[in-house]
Length: 277
Image (cartoon, rainbow, N blue to C red):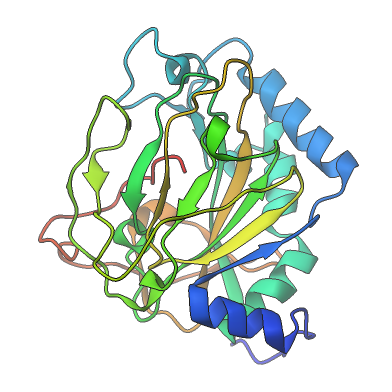
């Protein structure tokens, strides 16, 4: 049972900004040494191409940049590889726990880690909502997107749609596969506009699982857009999609939640990993 209260990590102004917009930028969350360790360790791990059991090459075309540098899914589950303990340590960072606790108003539970390389020339990911995949009920999930390189629109930085965190999970349309390697597309709803988020290496973006977001292709000539992303669910949720087991408290103990039942909001089972941002 979760009863302890976390120390206050965010100011009232920061909490209001998150509640109004659905996202919050935390500048310089990671120090230079941490950024360099993450960047170097993951880049060495992927330098020879996809890593069996770790890299996800689904939906990729041989010869495209992402086929050489595909995303790594759940690296924290691989203690035998250099990226494993590193990913687990950052996913269960106590400072991050306190921020997430403030945002959620209850204990956060870790569900997923991912690492994205997004090399020059890589396709982006079309606009989507994270909880379309995690299927958290009741409530929604929460993302912590940690920039390992400077991220802007030139190298395919993240784009959010402020205020859409108040919407239900929406049913997507097919994406433009010439620009995006994922298959789902959510159009920007009427009354909302895209908002590019520029991050410096070490910055972290926290955002609501219902917030519509995505990224465009990396059109730079020589700039990667690497990022470590983790997803969390609230202690009080009842269901989570099966893909995200085991769920972990920040002390590393396993939390049990029921598998999300039935189809997703569009009548299909969504128990797959999310695409890159």
